[in-house]
Amino acid sequence: MKITWLGHSAFRVEIGASVILLDPFLTGNPRFTGDFQTATQGATHVLLTHGHDDHVGDALRIARETGAQIVGNYEVCSWLEAQGAQDINPGNTGGRIPCGEFSVSLTDARHSASTVVNGTPVYLGPPNGLVIESPGAPTLYHMGDTGIFGDMALIAELYAPRIGIVPVGGRFTMDGPQAALAVQKFFAFDTVIPCHYGTFDIIAPDASAFIAAMQGARTRVWEGEIGEALEI
Image 1 (cartoon, rainbow, N blue to C red):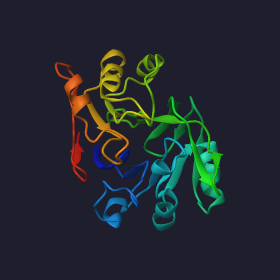
Image 2: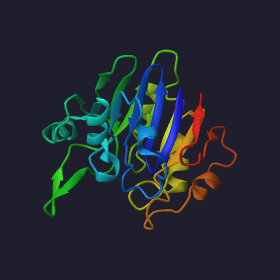
Image 3: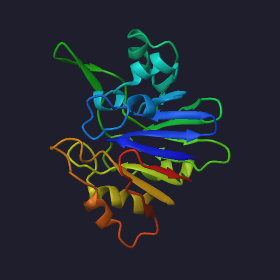
Image 4: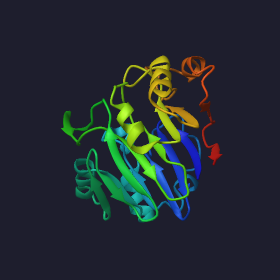
């Protein structure tokens, strides 16, 4: 498994022959300074946690240019299909979605999910986390945008994820200390990756509060640079 951070909550995950883009907010993302074509080259799947624009991002463009399948909740997939997406693979909270050599399970998340059309919010289904499972690879849990909640313990029990991608920016998601509490109280991650910080002035500029709160924990914190890859 190879995980490349693209800024905000966007990641490129490579498992076998699959190239998975998670929440691909690249265009308009001030933290993403790489090359769009390089970041999206060979994409086979686009996985979406929820329908906010800073997470759906370039999903439709990527699907059109690469033929990648869009995976997410029913409403956001249907919305993108209406915009021209040719290959969608929808599910809903609690369901496991087969995607060839891996599967995606949509978990609960505590947030909201919509886009805005002519000044009016349009509901795009529930917010979710994503659990990616593939034989021979560590299970990956991208929490999406969420606050801390007690049923994270059930996610840990059901899926036993070894790698966690955790929002730490505050205001719209958990802040650093809350995220560290969630990681240490509920999960036995080998590696945790903080995200959803530093993109906009209104959220935390860095992951320092999370890293400080994780001092002494057995879980490894990987704070990669934009475009840097973690290979497992």
